[in-house]
Length: 165
Image 1: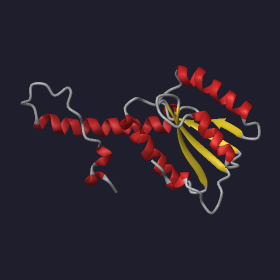
Image 2 (image 1 turned 90 degrees about the vertical axis):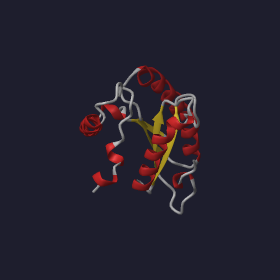
Image 3 (image 1 turned 180 degrees about the vertical axis):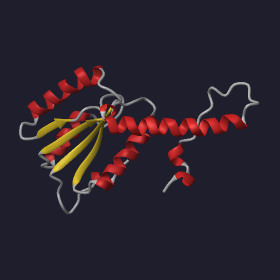
Image 4 (image 1 turned 60 degrees about the vertical axis):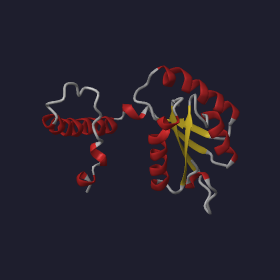
């Protein structure tokens, strides 16, 4: 998916933000990441926003950083879109970043903590869960006659047009 951030603009970006995700075999897995990318592109018009993956999907992080450096972007922040600081973020990502820093000495490459480590993200997830539970409770009372509803999906409360401001 090509976004506005991937196209040349009149004003060259000086900074870049790279959303770094794991990757998956199922192409649909990346859809929320593409939506996040689009939102950030709109929020940060003077910043080159990119999406890169550790494995199984493209583009990869080294290729993305190299491309940004070729566009004369000298300040790059990598934001791991992971829930926590597991093995990939403790071992694999630092090794990738060290290699990229060695290959791109004129570029400042910084790395944020995993998004799931931020209290504001946890607060948003907690609020989502509480809203989903309230909605599921209302749905459960209407479907008490069903024998097994444990595998039913709950609609995203944020997607309810009546619940939006």
